[in-house]
Each structure stands twice: as structure tokens, then as C-alpha cells.
Image (cartoon, rainbow, N blue to C red; front, side, top):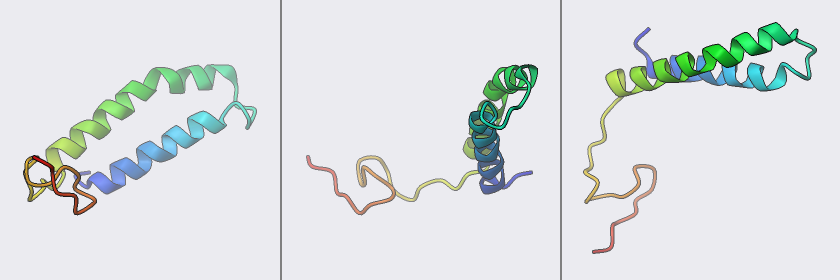
Length: 74
């Protein structure tokens, strides 16, 4: 899996299930297991985004935010 969007989507589903699990009457041992595994999911997501993500065509000095055409004040 080298597509960051798929990994981000799966990590978000994992997070949503983890937060909803106490309200869904999931056993406590499953919630604890999800809690213990959550750093692994986050670290893997960060690795995939940094390794296979698309780099920005702007530098930090040219554009402060990538999402908005905001010019930096000097």
C-alpha cells in the first residue's frame, strides 16, 4: 500500500471506531488493545505520508499555507 489517501482513510476509520467503541458495548479488552495499537497506526500513517506523499511545489518562504494563497509578510 503506497497510496497515502488509503492509509489516511483507514487510520481515520480506526480512530472513529476506537472513539465509538465504548458506546457500542465493545468489550474492555478490545478497547485496551485498540488503545495499545493506536500509536502503531499513527506512526505508520506518518511514515507513509512522509515517504510516498506529494511534496509541495512552494517553499515555506514563498507560501506559508499550502491550502490557501497566503503570501508571507516580511
